[in-house]
Length: 281
Image (cartoon, rainbow, N blue to C red; front, top):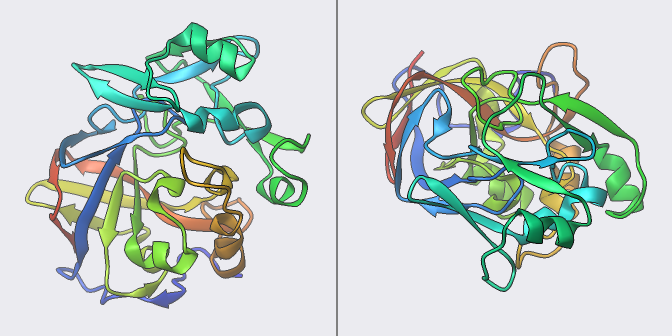
């Protein structure tokens, strides 16, 4: 078990001015828990990448946000893709055909509504990941209720903070595709292991203007294990960090499997594929 702030693996130097890597991929998810899209560049402000997690599906029955973190109810969300179109959003099903709220409600077996404003106290149900691994996606397992966006005061349907970064070093260590962890930035790094653990509490420059603070490791739920579109069920996407990278994400929390880090935006800017990521402080 690893304490908060420790860094399993071999990281690059952590002196100010160190180039940590370059932006290899940029991804946004216009609707929470649906599949997303790659972009080549994006404006970034206090709400993260432009258009990211700007909408969500509301479970009309419970009043909570539909999330694949509760896979027995919502694993099917990961069969649908949302892309940004003319400032709005287009949702397509596995066959590529456009769907609306009525179609989604019928397919998912629960009435949902597409919303664009996060109400105060908006929450999701998070199944206990180890129980999902042990008993399967369709089993009745314990879950917790988590408030969204505690480090994202400007809005958006974020689990915690408005940006999520993961490195190629971590993806190599877990043996899983980036899409499973749903990051915004995939950073190409040369180190081995979970190198971004060492960035927590530090400030980073991305490209010429964007400035970020890394605020916490990203605890993993059952979502990375689930089928994502054509990607099959992959239990090791959770089991591997559970074995090799258990961290305390925030004071008062237990040690949890982690992969990637959360960030807040100190200075808005523009981000482009290939931008250098540099340690500031």
